[in-house]
Image (cartoon, rainbow, N blue to C red; front, side, top):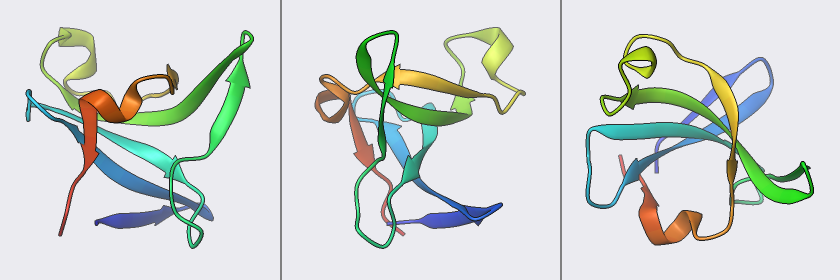
Length: 82
């Protein structure tokens, strides 16, 4: 599992299970493992940093942090090994 450290925050790279052209870095609770859940607008979410998402032109070149609902997250995304 690839991990990176940015300003004392650790991220783990996740890719879409069926669309390898979609990748996110997800804030991790390293060394404890797993993404860090937040409550955003009353919903459990993970903070993600877009690495690559060719589905949306505005996300191809911009690495933005955003909140992504955690429900069903692991149904669609898996950690990148390496």
